[in-house]
Image (cartoon, rainbow, N blue to C red; front, top):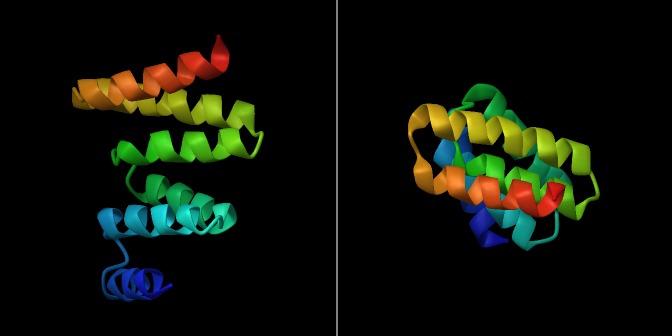
Length: 103
């Protein structure tokens, strides 16, 4: 839990730090707190829709929680953003996750 406390302190000092918010969400996932992780990912992407790595993790979280339509929507938006950013690696990861879910 110490890491979560430390990340929360960093985030309190700089609430717009997407990296810290993403890292905190991943820590919540490790502790099976998908509700907190989902809220953080959604807040992060509302503020910074170009933080492409969060689309994959949010989509996977939604899949685990049987929100398949939500996961598809997240993957589709992430694919658009990755393509716009020219991030081929993220695009390929999102495409694989999307195709595994849809096909």
